[in-house]
Structures are given as C-alpha cells and as structure tokens.
Image 1 (cartoon, rainbow, N blue to C red):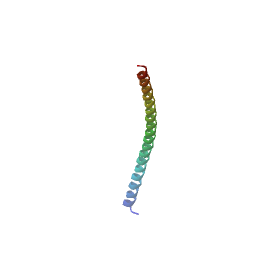
Image 2: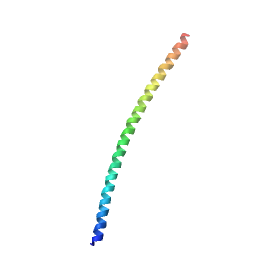
Image 3: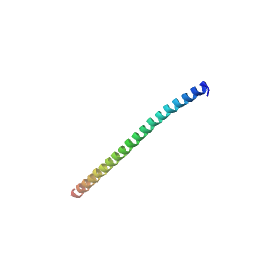
Image 4: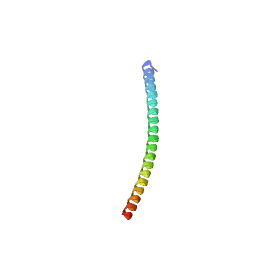
Length: 69
C-alpha cells in the first residue's frame, strides 16, 4: 500500500472513531431526555390527580352551601 493510501485509511479511521464518540454522546443525551420526560409525565399526572381532588372538594362544598342557603 502506498503512503497516500495509508494516510487516507488513518484519516478515515480517526474520523470514524470521532463520529462513534459523538454518536455515543448523542445516545446518552437521548436516554437522559427520555428519563426526564418520563419523570415529567409522572409529575403531570400526579398534579392532575391532585387538581381533580381539589375540584371535587370544591364542588362538594358548593353543593353543601347551596343546600344550606
């Protein structure tokens, strides 16, 4: 193999390694984002449940006040 071919192969191998590193970082970020999204979704569901409980309590109080008025 000529020196030029060896240089090209080395450059390609280096670029390949760099791209693999970037891909690994992107995959790590994607996993972290998915975990964060799952946590946020669970939190939103918990807040919605709490909101529904408060609404039900408010409606019950309104009904009680309307009956006593």
